Image 1 (cartoon, rainbow, N blue to C red):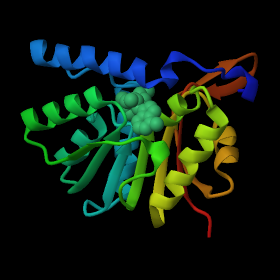
Image 2 (cartoon, rainbow, N blue to C red):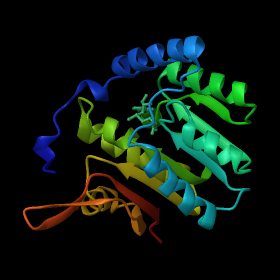
Image 3 (cartoon, rainbow, N blue to C red):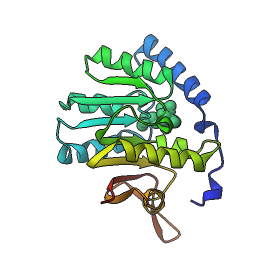
Length: 211
Ligand SMILES: C[S@@+](CC[C@H](N)C(=O)[O-])C[C@H]1O[C@@H](n2cnc3c(N)ncnc32)[C@H](O)[C@@H]1O
């Protein structure tokens, strides 16, 4: 994607996410519906499968822009112990807490804007769709720079930064990250072929800090 292609969008605003998750809180309390899983369950399975083979259950893991917290809920069911979910949308955190409480899962949730820095340091920082949203905000270049600085500060040496994006290819996001991180692994995702070229709808990248 060209830089100029990704103009601001409502997905880059707190108002949009508050309205979205307020509806989901209502649906959860009325019908028990846990809400949207961005990019679908197949992508979640791929991330979780990679984590279970590469990340110890004692690792501290944060999901930034956690939404309803489904990734953390899955990890809690697999016996991961130190789980934190952050989102700048209060209704998102309300929903995630309500789901965890209903399912008896121990996950710490907190309202927090990733652009303001993360509250702790972690072994794993996970993001599915949040960097995409940040890149759709009004001051996207400044927001992108703040986001990457927050991640760099909060990631323990030897930790993993796992990011799933539908806006950027692996090469593009690796280029954004190049001052702080190097690509460690791409988790395979379904491919499509168009005009003789092979592409991916969604990329899942695992980065490590640059030495
Ligand atoms: C596309 S949704 C993805 C939600 C969740 N990660 C998932 O996979 O279902 C993007 C999420 O990022 C959150 N978000 C956007 N900008 C943020 C920021 N600056 N700090 C924290 N959360 C943010 C939104 O509130 C929303 O929950």
